[in-house]
Image (tube, rainbow, N blue to C red):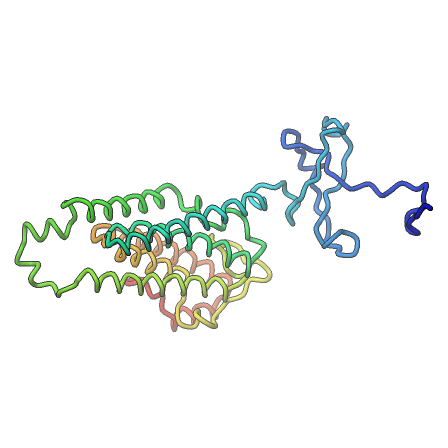
Length: 319
């Protein structure tokens, strides 16, 4: 006995799966990836399917055809690649887990170098949250660049390398600044309160917690109004956010990163990098805030002027 589907008679051909005729080596932006509107009833699960193109149009043999996903702008998988995003997030998770395990082990063995893997875990968490909050509240910008791993330039990575080097020297050699001060100016050590390093550590942890929480809340509450780059043109849906943490701070994401960065150096016990970080971050945020607010005044006019007058930035010497 034979069974046939009422939708597809016995002698009819099954519908052919739509595939993309392109390969990485022969991609054509005008033929291979075409933007299609969201149509949940015509496309499976709401995912856009690439429009098929003939092999003759791009020189790809039919045998090399493969299915492709495109992003919402019809671009090839690159910055929006799910593979790149998942690998980056997975890598940060592995680093975070390994760093936390190393931190706990070194603390239990009374090794002061635990600060190094703890610093690495803070970095991993920060970069993961940058993408996660963007994806959760502003999905159109959820690209690999939202991790901020390469967006800040080589100086960003150099600063963290120098910070780890200072911490390593401070806890493995007698070349740290506190040790040098204790040797050259022994009387100065008596002026400091006992357990100074514990006080500095607690302050650093508090600064890290406040900074990270403030920045994360700011990104979430701003939603689609948040962007990692200064916007020179106002989009149609751009609104001035004045509720939540924005009611207390004018630029809470900058406030958060500033104090988070200084807190990491206090946790590491780096007096030199603490000062360098303070100078570098202040020098970065002051002109950025001034430039950004010029555009915000153009966008929102008197509304932003009044908001700026009543709301502080929270970074020293920046009004």
